[in-house]
Image (spheres, helix red, strand yellow):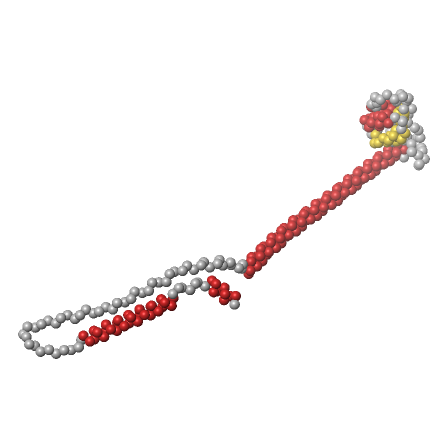
Length: 290
């Protein structure tokens, strides 16, 4: 019912005098039809045959037929006034729900694809960083292992070198002892450690000669009280070369002890005794004011 009322409300208004115009048009058409019928009937009656007798030798011409009567046609009725129809209300287009859903689905899919790509990039970056850290850690471990190996090799080399030096020194000492003992004609016992054919010590002046070789090399400029004395042990090769020196009793003044040890190192070798021999190991006391 509401729809019918709305359609009647928006329908164009009825034209005024529509019935009257229709009646006039019907009457005009009837009049036109009657006029046409009368004209046709009149023309048929004019063609009736007639007989005439010729009374004169002069022919008479027949009069022309009357002009046909044109029926008067009523003018067509005036057209009804044009009534402007009201403009229809604007049509509000309903949103295309399907298109909106499809658009939203495509946007969501594109967003998920971007997020997935970003996640893959982050994972690849994180994996690369982990691999780089693992490589650095492995390189550090390998370097540490290599350093330990080098240190072990150096320690082994130092140990082997020290053992070789000790062995060489022992051999030199043994050769010196054998040479000094004179095994062919020694008068000492088999356990004797003397350096001559007969048991005897170094000459009385031998210690002074050694001290006279070492003391000039002592450089000491400090001013100290008393007369500090440093006792040093010397180990000497058969040719007189000083192999090593060691402080066995400090003087109480470290600078004097160091000066004595440096002097021994500078000396390098000691002179032979009067018989051409050297004592392989002995101790000497160096006093500041001796």
